[in-house]
Amino acid sequence: MGKRRYHHGDLRGALLDAAEELVHEHGDAGWSLREASARVGVSPSAAYHHFSSRDALVRALSVRVLSRLGEQMAAAAQAAGPGADARQGLVAAGRAYVRWTLEDPAVARLAFGSGARDRDAAISPHPHEVLDAELDRLVEIGDLSAEARSGAEFAVWAAVHGLAALLADGLMTLDGPEAADLHTKRLVQAVLTGLAQETAPPPGWPAARSAHTERQSKGQSNATANQPRPTSAKGTGTLNQDTRSGTLTPQKPRPPDQ
Image (cartoon, rainbow, N blue to C red):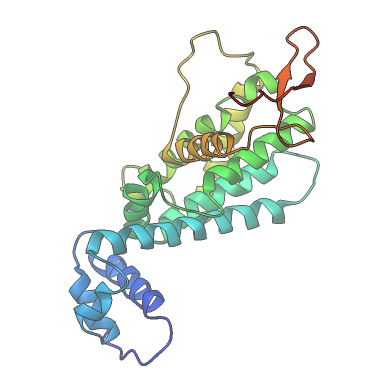
């Protein structure tokens, strides 16, 4: 695609559009911030007002496309609707993941290599959250035990991402997107069948983590740390907890030093 002149409006968005086009054309590493600026028709110095470096532009692009992936997965799961097979929502989300990867493998590689590893990336809706929601729904309706739910999203993610990567890298070939859909369905159902036969993981079982789950844990820890300490209704006293009853009782304020 040739150079286009930027006139006014959202320069940041225009640079992200240009970067995505360059990734599509040249791969995740075959372009520069200067080239993205030239494609939009602005000087590199103008681009630096929004992105301090190429890496900053790549991180922002990764957040954008991973959020788009999350939206597509959520829409696919919702469109599956309540049916005879409660697992169809999760299957549909997996299909959307694989199809999205195959539509533009270069953009997918960039996103998986940058945004997916960024613990500070505000991706919404995050693909991980879509898998979580569908698995939680299966627990609610009794199709998956609560004991087997722990870490189940990583099992599904590993299977679906593995299929997508094999197809994108040419290590596995299929005749068309419909064939990919069928293989995705079989894979997700196989994982769920295995999970349905599991009980709770044994003590000491290593928990899986991702940049997204660590970001969530950090946010929860910060929220807990920032909660105000309880005070009495009179304002000057504090609250003591009765360790036997678990109730909170006012503590008389300490008199000032004489």
